[in-house]
Structure formats: structure tokens, C-alpha cells
Length: 507
Image (cartoon, rainbow, N blue to C red):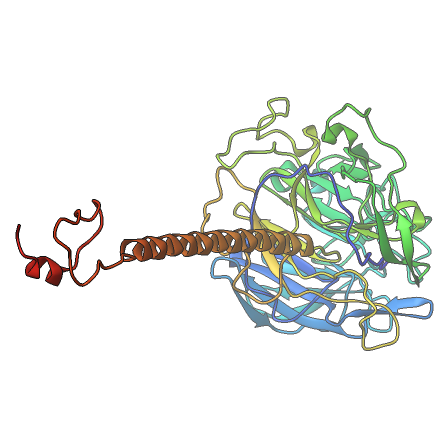
């Protein structure tokens, strides 16, 4: 489901470390609701499809007026973009999985909001497309590549989970295993909760799958905070609970737009949290609330899961953006790579053993974006901004972003401390951070003005004193033209004209 964002952001308790985001090359065009998949053998991140115009809300529906079938190839070593061969069909709100060479694109919707059931396959070596027999008629689903082999019964396969039916009335809890050679499907373990708009990732060698957040079709007002996990080497009939998402929230009032059954409503709400964990004397982390997020990006890397951006809708009163990054797995680390909290487990443990932690703000708020972790960097691409009435149509719309950033989440300190942090390329910049920057520069400017005024006053006063001394030293009165005999000499300090001294007759 497409939920909107408020026009004024929600303050949050700061639990973040000082880790700068680095601006990278923008997408060739603005995009949301697409897939971004790492293909390390080719040194590329492959982006397929998506919504390439501002999403519009009219009457009872929200929709994307233009959907892409373009393939974008990001060379993360060179920080450059190139184009691949277009996909066989346009789609957005779909899923993708890769075996390291071939990229499988499944599900999603077309510009008329019809489900796209076909499974298209992109060969990253030849750059060509094919279509296999498997059909997955659902949108907003998740898909991973399973190398674990399903206890040797099926072999490597595509593992599909969740998603919605055509009218969003059902969020699926079932999963499908797809044989990439034959296209045959078989049922897999069930999710504990049916969900769409969620993150679905695997942990590679650890052979675990995670389903993170999203919406259930029974309640599009409350995004799911729950996280589920599955051992891909097991024959578990169901997923198992994992640690829920953690987001710190502060009391705030904001103006928002939200979609309920595809209807947009604009008004003010109070986002006071319903309850806190811990008492008033506890730490900000203890007081943090477990809340859900949907329409976010979830990525795995560096022995950790990362939930990036997204949205929520407290008390069904309006949607609130998430402008931060949560991490499940490795401990928080300082800029020198040392653990900050000795209570947390050391690196190298199973990602589920540590709790979720908010590690950074986003450089700009976004949802329906994508994220990838590669070589210690967390990359984020595209997405949508908050709802606005400044649209070509007469309804609300959600501007699409083209900006891309990366954040160091690997071992040790940031390897590129002098790299661009966002000043040299178009767009970008978190609105709150921009305001803080403007305030900082205003204070510096005011201080400089005060200093300059003080210097000017000091110099002016000094000059006035010097002029006064000069006037005092030259202000003397000449004696009479003749000096009478017997008249006392002028008092000490009284100057006598030189010519008088020369003509005076000695006694």
C-alpha cells in the first residue's frame, strides 16, 4: 500500500552516532518502488523498474502515472551509472533475487494497477532477458535466492514470501519455492503474519531469512514492528519470531497526509506515543518505543540487518516518516572501531543475538527506497518524499527522489573521511540538517559582525585620542614682539619664538 508522509517531520530522541553520509552519483532519473540488487561478480548494483513520476492521489486511489522498465547499472567502484537492456515489461512494487549471475524479477503492478505475474530473468553477463514459466500474481512481495538447498530436496531456488492480492484485501502469509530451471513452484514455510510492503533478506552463509515490518491487510493504519526469521537449512513449517523493530519517538504535533483505503486525508494530529517502555528515569534507549515501519528498505551485510527509512501511521491519524537507520546485529562502534557498549555482544555473532539499534539519521527523509550493503558501505537510492499539494494535478502527490548516498558501516573507521558529504551535487540535504546549518552560519555571521563593529569602534576611538593629543601639543601662544628688560623669562614649558630668541639683547 502507498502510505503518505507528513509535511512536517517528527522530532526523535537522538540515539545516533556521528557517522557522515557520503553523496554518490544521483540516479539518472527520479525513481521509487523499484528493486536494487547487488551482483558482486559483476561489480554492479542492478536497478529494475519502478515509479518514475510523482505518485498521485485522486479520489479514492493513489497511483503512479508512469512506470519504468529500464535497467540501471551502478558501478560502485567508479561511482558511475550505465544502462542495461530494458526489461520485457514495465512494473513496480515487485521483488528481485539473484544467484550471482542471473537476476529474477517477480510480481508487481503495471500502470493500470494490474498485477504482473510473469517472472523475467536478466542475465548480467550477456545483458539479455528471458521469461520462465513461474507466475507470481502478487505485489509488494519479498524474494531471496536460497543457496541452502532446502535439505537437498530442491536445490538452490527462488524463495518468495508475502505480498498483496489485486485489491490489497489480502496480505499473503504463504511462501513459494520456485525452481529456476523448470519454473515449477512448491509451498514453503508460512509467515506468522501475512504482510506486504516489508523487507525480505537472507544472511548468505548463515542461511537465514528475515521478514521485517510491513503492513497487514487488516490494518493499514499500523505498520508491523514484528520481525520473523527462518532457518533455510531446516524443514520448519513456520517462521519464528525475532527481535522487533526499535524506534525512538518524541511527543510532536505535525500536519500530515495519509492514505486509508486509498483515500488521502490532510489534517493535523498529535503524535504523542501511546506508551513508553521504562520509567521517566530510564535512558532514551529504554524509553524507546517498539513501532513498525513499512515501505522501507532492508539490506544485509557486515553481519547485520539494516532497516532504512520507511513510514508509520500512529493511531491511524496520519503517516509519519522514518528518517533514520536501524541495525540488528553487530555492536555500535566508535569512529576508531571500538565497541561503545560493552554489554552488547562482540562482532561475529549471529545477527539475531543483538537488539535493534538506531545508528544514524538519514541525509534526507524517504520511503519506498532501496538499500544495498557492499564492501562495508550502506548505499541508499531514490524513494519518495513527503506528501505535498504542489502537484501538476489538483490532488496530493509524493515527489520522487533521484538522490543516492552511502554510509560506512564496516569494520574500523571511515576509510574516506575527506570524501564529499553532499555539497557538490544537485539535490540532497536533510531539511532539519539544512535548517541547523543555516542557523549555525547565521550565528557565525552575527558574531563576525559584532567583532568587526567592535574593531571599528576601537580604531575610531584610538584615532580620536591621537588627534586630541596632536591638537594639545601645538596649541601655544606667542609672546609679545618685544621683550622688556628685567621681565621674567616665560614659565617652563612656554615656547618662545625662534626669531625673538635671536634678536634679544643680552644683559
